Image 1 (cartoon, rainbow, N blue to C red):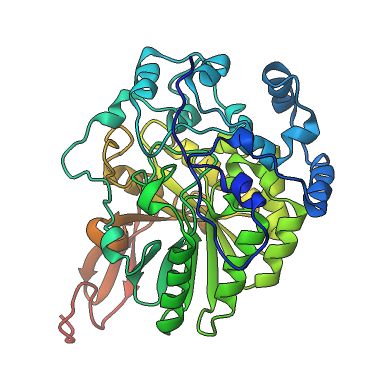
Image 2 (cartoon, one colour):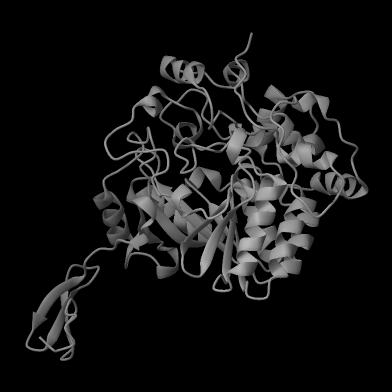
Length: 440
């Protein structure tokens, strides 16, 4: 008997059952996916026909033929099919991947939130034999996850303590984080919200929660910027996501809406013509995409980013610095160059948050500084993200950069350039590091 990894029902399945309305439904975790065979609407049928035109690379076609011989290319390019056929059990994993004893033991031990969940598409990118492959390490658990070290906790950023209503985090003066689902089609093992994603219970998104969040935003006119996250908001059906966007856009003081997502990377077929047509109605709308490694920049993903960019959505990347995955200059530079070619601007490079059981992923902060220093001057500034530590307990993002200031000499600022040479800049005013208001 295969071990079933507990998880909530995919919103893409559940929400298709409900009539289109101005509400977010409760995600039911108890009902098996197989019992829901929702009729396909005309829009969904049209998207499925169009999805067959999406590019499918040669290696992916081989994977499809080997492991899903009963599925057509049209099935593969249907994001709902991808959700229904996610790899979630030991039996399914071992059909595709040769698990190590460590991986198998970690999966057997798992309970609660952050289950295993991998779309067939993303599984096609995983090395079936190499346990040290970067992408494999990010989605298949190991026993190190169960070792909590000093300074780690389940909510390291203090999001729960900055949540005035369930599903809303108000940490910065003019912006809020709106959590619209706790479901992701692929679960990253280093997830900041490992305490809640893929689980049921109090952190499931209920209609009352989402409406309370909207009311809070309406009442607080200082809020001009809303980041929609979760879980992954692009896992919602178009109609539900449209309701969230239209409600926010109707609030006069909300100027800026962002969506944080990894769906275009783990499920590029989610970026359908219907989705992009809907999204472009809510400009200015920005999107932050979670990229980890250059292996994710497949032809399918590049095409998906192109569809979003063609819809007028500015794209930025958010990358977590991970030990043994992307913590070297060569890998990071290749990723950032590839993102630019995919029309995605590198935005943030995050120090890995100290969630419980994350020590095997976290590098010293100095490693991030080392990478940024090695990139600066040797490639375009467009390719260099801002390296930040998201300070524990709600301190917010704090940029960490190499120190290029050597000091002062004879009313001149001494600066060290990327090439190691020191340069002088005339600067006789208030010196850097002086806050007294008087020249020092």
